[in-house]
View 1: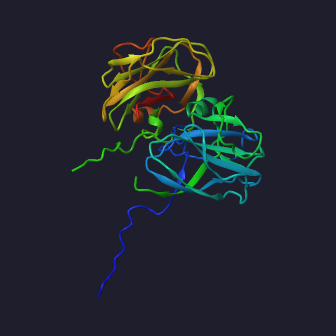
View 2: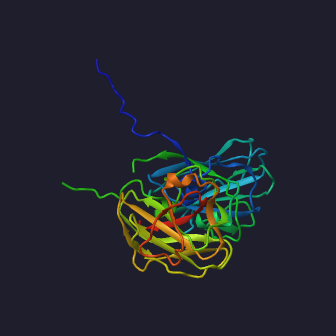
Length: 186
Length: 170
């Protein structure tokens, strides 16, 4: 009799990437000193996108992008990943928030990201209504600025290609974005 | 036989480290704009997991135009470099970029240093001196401009913990 033994799994087939984790972004280093984490809140300025730089330790492929809705989900969200030159790599497009206090995924084109490479994750929302988003509270202008955060008055919900960000003009709420990823061996 | 040269794992995102902060300590809370003690030197310890070089140190000045200084020290207080006393402006990131990046050895203790002449508010962790023994941070009175060598004193109950952003060569 011949037995076929499958090879051992060396990595998880998928994982959730938190762009606000301290291993991933300076923003994460700053905000994750809190024990409370993000909470239901509101976006700073409607259709003014915010973006933070991030870097990965392993090669990953993004399968989905998502966010956590606040206690009163609604209005449209948009998340996109940009390269170091602000060229858009992948986006959710404008997507209606649905499901209070739930992590909402948008299936995106599979997009490979390379470790030790600078990328940007941008978030945009079309409303400042309370409890539409889940954001880190108590953000100071200095926290946002030192994190490398930039902004762009898009004037619409869909994140543009390329992003043309400018320096922050004030403290900005940053709703925590996530990615469902498959891990590479890099 | 061939060898593959890989960059070491566990590098910091963008080569940047917030001091004090992850991975040194958790539970400090989100930083706020607050003021420390005039002319007090604040020395924040850190250890890098890989050998690299310091490119810059930054802090956020929220209000006030007091002079400030930024610097790097070794474990026993020898100054490896400093900006020198420099005027501040409000709502601005102030940065010290050594003319030549300063070598930082893996696994060795260093201190990132900050001092300001007045009580301008900067981005800082605030409100709990209980973290001082855990972080190993130190202070020194009358330390503007940052002296060489530094004389480290226990931070006691000083609850003002400046947020410094260090950038290393990648």
